[in-house]
Image (cartoon, rainbow, N blue to C red):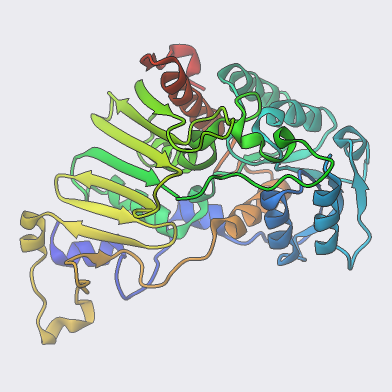
Amino acid sequence: MSRRKFIQHAGLLAGGLVLNNQLVHAIGNSTNYAKIKVGVIGCGDRGRGLMMVMKQLPELFEIRAICDVLDFQLENAGKIVKDQPVKSFKDYRSLLDDSSIQAIVIATPLHLHYVMSVAALAAGKHVFQEKTMTYSIEEALDLVSKVKLHPRQIFQVGHQYRYVPLYYRVKEMIDKGYLGKVTQIDCRWDRNASWRRPVPPGYSDRQINWRMYKEYSGGLVAELLSHQIDFINWAFNTHPDEVLGTGGIDFYKDGRETYDNVQVLLRYNKAGMIGNFGATCANSREGYIFKIKGTKGTVELLVNEGVFYPEPATRKELGVVDGVTSASKIEWNKDGGIPILKEKMKDGTMFALQDFHKSITQQVPPASNVQTGATTAISVHMSNSAIYNNRMEEWKEEYDV
């Protein structure tokens, strides 16, 4: 890995982002600007966030209907689309009966993902299903089978890292060997807050704080750590073979059922790696951490920023560039790292929705699809089973989709 090769072929430095073919496909704009008529089921924070991004893509999407069982969520979503005629529903099945709607966005509590996806497919709709794809392994495997029965309907899963140029670049670094042999992955997503929301009059805690109840939620692993777990599955074309976990309700003794403090260890036997994934609701010092450690260097990632830290031997190999060759100078940060991309990238949701439109109009598979979504949903469920049942979970042959 010469300095010149590192700069020119990794495309990390001042020359800007060099898009490889896979990335161009995933985030490239659609050449067909036919508007897709969309219905949004689930109008909480994520549902409204997706609506706001679609509003920024008026040439691609037209929101025609919204649905939520909570009146105030439906009202809040209605404000986003108050300038256009939009139907409101409290029963998602009534929305699916509208033949003018071509695609459905599902941003509901996790336990509803499967049943709503199956119903939307049966109604002939394309589906954008927010992560995590399903609540259980059985649902994930069955949904893969059902999507295959609708080959002309697009099914996309909202794992946004598969659409962020920064993360594509890191995957390319891994593929080309710039990190050497990766053996360790360290991930955290911490906060110092209860994750609890106030309950308006007339509603139950289970309706508002569904993430805290096992009946509806996969807890911190499904809601937060699934993003990082999905990236590792994708970047290394792998899945965990063995999962250990622990956790507890260690701080917020407020009647919740899902744990406020979790740690899982994922062993990737074929890849020869260990992944440590953790989250707590009782300390925010480190916040978001994503470190991928190889024999030649470490990548440290935030959501929209990344730095490559070469190992001492690699750093020596890269060398020091003098003024004569400054056009290709490596720019070290104050900690001795190399910024992976100079510019901060925008949220991958924009790219993901562009890919959704492109996949529908050009009939091509999305980058985040039912097979990749199932692999990560299974990984998440194995993690939760290890945490709550205090046992090691092993990947089974039937999980290969």
